[in-house]
Length: 226
Image (cartoon, rainbow, N blue to C red; front, side, top):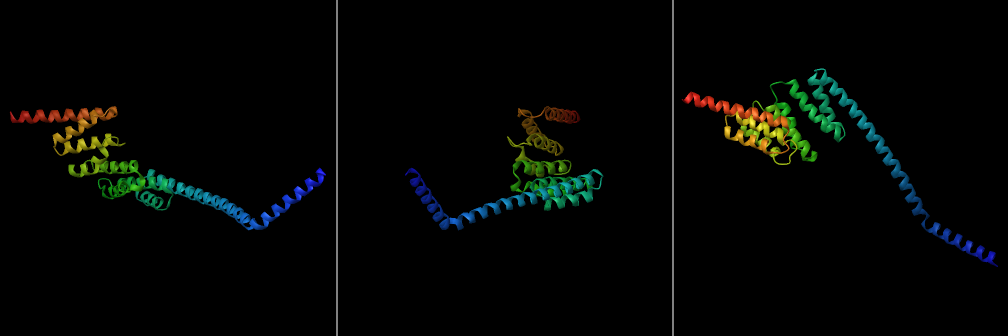
């Protein structure tokens, strides 16, 4: 008797499973197809991304080689191509190298390189660290020529507390103020450098030298008056 009941239960289960399959098979098959298609699409995307990154890496290396060979104009064009076509990581690096190549190709005429750095600094999608670095690079190119007001506009925002490149920005501002014969502003920026507990030793030493120069100039002026 037990075997008969077991056979009946098994038959009932088969009938229920068949009914469920008949009712939902199209949905089950559809979900399975979507899963397989999704996996295949993702694998294809990964392959395409890897190929694109590899191509961008090769082009970037070629541009670096041109730069190292002193072919700055050609390197600038190559970096510009990478910046416009490559995945995000290589594109950001290429924009910086493009600006550097422009600066090397036009020594003493930083306007084109500064323009590229300014565009990077204004690109909020890159994040503050990249933007600050671009602003600093532009400031370095202009350190010997730009008026103090221009340097303050460019560098004071990145010279604030907690900004990653504040130490160098403050140094450049102190030098710009000294170059403009604005001793009060120069000392203010020097104080910002020396008061920051995270200022690197080298920056402190350079500010000590600048303070000595300012003091020496002051004594020279007093000597002339007397």
